[in-house]
Length: 407
Image 1 (spheres, helix red, strand yellow):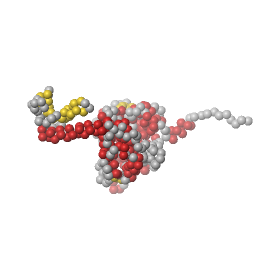
Image 2 (cartoon, helix red, strand yellow):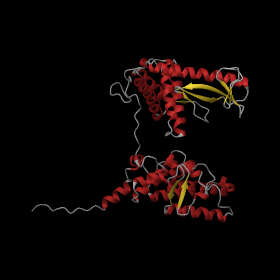
Image 3 (cartoon, one colour):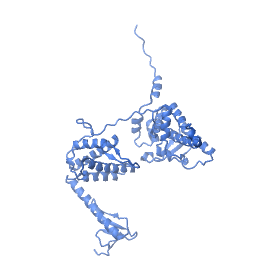
Image 4 (spheres, helix red, strand yellow):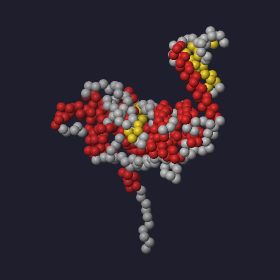
């Protein structure tokens, strides 16, 4: 082929095989063959010298992927081949949310990094059949008690992951080895997720039973949140503190009366108040995005009070409804003073679901209000019980005529 050859809109005269230049944009592309089909891969540059280096990297990457597939096809793949296949399949799944894909990337990176710290070897270079149940158990214990890691925006390293992270990492290893079984690299996965003999690999997880205050206690809690600390050295700041206490209470009430997650509540805009309902702009799942939640009486009263307070202060009712990003400290302090078991932001969402159930709203409807995408499975699992206060009231309504003792 002549170096000056033109192929449609592509300039093939770059002097490097399979390095093409788009005539319209001037950018360079690598022509690769993946899965028996040719495609163009952008090198994101219009500089020939940079494109040449990136082209070489792209060709090498395709070669590694091709070699990996060949090893898997003949049942001789390495753990790295299985890890790459598993991650590629997961990222290509259009049903998975962006956050789920980011979480899978993080879990894969954690698996590789901590395996090296635990055993001093590269997991990618290991043969699947050499992974043993003893290694899996040792790795789980290492993650739980010995692994050091640093969370985002923190200076000090932490020691030991929580049970849910240990479970996620061990389950990822299990799924990767399952792919090894399917490809013929190993006859079976060498361990179960919950083996009976030798102790559990996965740390047991038990779902805590929700312990929420009664409706009357919640009202007392919100009143306590509004109370301004009475301290002589804070007299000059009393107006500021009163505003902060009110803002924190309004945010807490909004979550308790709408079922909004924290990020959904702080992003609530006055334009999202539709009169008889509100729009909650969730991002966690597909079902939570821009969902419409009817106003219960308490939410309607809250928003009316918020409007009145802002109008009295000469503020416009536009833009974000809340000026703060969280109310954790205010909620913690109020719980201690009111003698209520500690509540979190998410506890307020649980409270909303519980009062809806007690009012007779069916689980699938509540599930839609909460933004769940499973039709009520998670809601039934989480809120299938009722508070003891409600249970006793319901039991009192049950009457049964019994026959007296035989004479």
